[in-house]
Length: 179
Ligand code: MNH
Ligand code: ZN
Image 1 (spheres, helix red, strand yellow):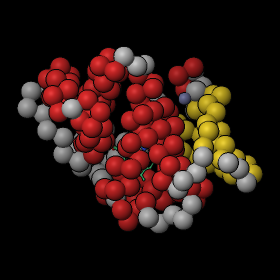
Image 2: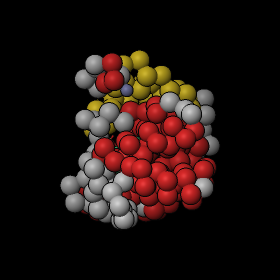
Image 3: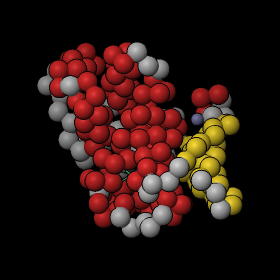
Image 4: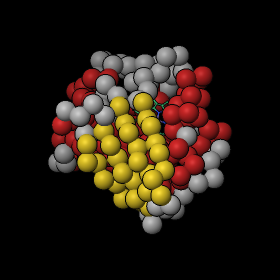
């Protein structure tokens, strides 16, 4: 995973738990002297270990921490890549463009990024169906990112997750219900 994702986690942890908590997590789960640089790649296991450490500190399940992280990560990425996120006039437009525009731009900015495959179809005025597939199985993080995007457009969103890679499915299905 890119440094930018670790920086997003760092920002959230410092905000929620303070600088010392982040230093303790680095000490426990990252190699000595680790500094996260946005365009550089670091091992996925390191991100999972840090997130697990955050979960332990908060006494919350990892899935919940990944969802909270995803939600704050949306704002962080949108701020960091203002041009990309500002292209879209609505939540629906943004979500329909994750693969074809947003992550396509990411591929131009970062050398060989590790991105999921995301397919979205519009079911009706209030419903989008999203299929998520990635060997990293970060579907809970994806849910959080979608909630962050909904917040950005002041939309009320609820998500069903009837099919999940964590239960052996070949992709996750997320049903997005808008008000
Ligand atoms: Mn996007 C990684 C989903 C919006 C830039 N993105 C990921 C991952 C998920 C994801 C899930 C984790 C990797 C994986 O699952 O295999 N991203 C989304 C969703 C939205 C989204 C559901 C909107 C909602 N992403 C954005 C926006 C940007 C962005 C906006 C920036 C403009 N995403 C990234 C980058 C990575 C990433 C950068 C990390 C790539 C890497 O580590 O190589
Ligand atoms: Zn899932």
